[in-house]
Length: 317
Ligand SMILES: NC(=O)c1ccc[n+]([C@@H]2O[C@H](COP(=O)([O-])OP(=O)(O)OC[C@H]3O[C@@H](n4cnc5c(N)ncnc54)[C@H](OP(=O)(O)O)[C@@H]3O)[C@@H](O)[C@H]2O)c1
Image (tube, rainbow, N blue to C red; front, side):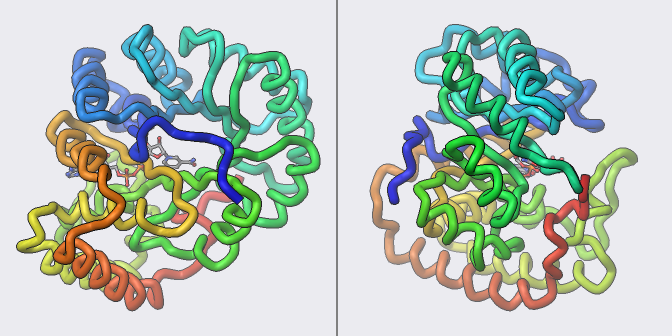
């Protein structure tokens, strides 16, 4: 089945960096420069959440993108107990985003032991009231999606998916393909790993959440690093950076409607958003197609060493 949503760009700019522990002090002018650079390169999908910096990311996205043509804004609300509270959360996001209608609103995470249907009923009600256009879920498994689809029509699923996290290929992505649910990948660069910039023994700044992800577990990281080293070699001579090939790889996989990428600087977004302009032709050159095949092979080996922990953060709210 074909998804109902048509995204105006295949790449979406993730904006959690504007509100996270490391980005909280990012001045508005830097945020503006990152958004401008993405927009200037054809990115029209912007992904935020009420939870990013306690609304800071939504406010900045709202202020800076106000009035720009063709922008598609997606946001996320957290778990609430009633449909009414979900509608109120949507209204609060509309206020911060300065938009009458939010294009896509997700339920951000499930909540252990709780019925997710009331919040989904709330999102469906918000759609009926014209406050949002599409309803999405994020980080749900197949059985949770089955349950909540009695309460709302699900248009999109946002999940972690990249060359170093391919677990969704087993069941989640086929489920979405069958039902016309658009899959949007997050952490498409494995939080920067797929740029190849991290050494064998990475040293993160205080407050950086990355060391607690599955990738940096002692038995896992050597395999991740070896895989990325091989991927960097594969990218050499292709005319594209590994970050760009990794994004392109995600976008070429079945069921993937869009790929989110985060940035902490203009230089980063200039590099990744450039891929949007490379997507014009459906077919890749032979060189690129060969390199993408090599990346798949390396990734298949690496995946044997990356345990299925549900999500990369080992976060189970
Ligand atoms: N639904 C969910 O639960 C969920 C979860 C996670 C993310 N998301 C969404 O998805 C978006 C993207 O995911 P993400 O930020 O986790 O991971 P990502 O896009 O895989 O990685 C982003 C990070 O990679 C590094 N980077 C990006 N481009 C680079 C370049 N050209 N050169 C060097 N480094 C580069 C930067 O890290 P440094 O500069 O800090 O090293 C940046 O912060 C988020 O912003 C958010 O909107 C959603």
